[in-house]
Length: 276
Image (cartoon, rainbow, N blue to C red; front, side):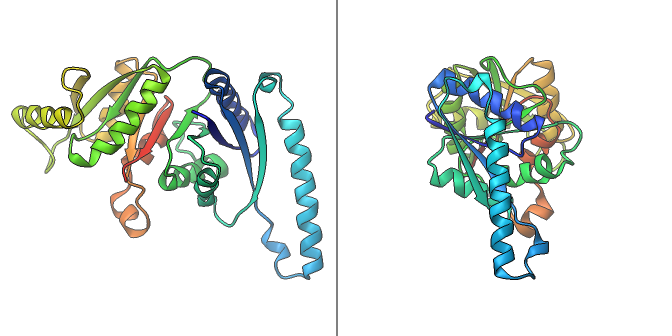
């Protein structure tokens, strides 16, 4: 891990993410790129160009001052930190920033089990998860100050999950963290018998070259999300890893996203990896 992107809005949640990023930066000798997405008020759009320029300069100077104060923290003393101010129309632009910076991870914070209703760490968190092509780590509550020890990776053991599994395994190896695979059996069309599950899991493990090397757990629940969250709680895991399709538009509206739902409701940190 060489570079971590941390979006901030100068709140306590931002600082929790920044503290976590500092821990990882010290552990892996990584650089932190701290990004503030500066949105110019719509109220200035209808006025003269000269006023717009003055307004932008004022907001830019104010943000630079906030940045200087926000980054003046003892825990950043031995960390390479690059502040970055970006103008934006949509928070989905953050994934473009991450790609331009060739970052390895986007790290942000949310309240967790309240439904992510806040303006910054609510809908925007889901936008980041949906659009990012690199792993996204969403922490909840207090900053992470210790290495992850046990992670679960939920999947249905189809071929679609081979690449995201490899990404999840690479991150788990980086964290020196045990990775346990989880299959959630639900009622309805996707229900599978014990024999079907065993055969499906065996084929998957053979394809990814992990036969006999990983622990696989199976649970039954009324929804995949509920099964994941309940297992994570009872299994004393400290990280949930979720693949995401990155669905958009009507497809996302009709089918939703299990990864986004887990990010929304989990108490534990959640790491998302893109399926394609």
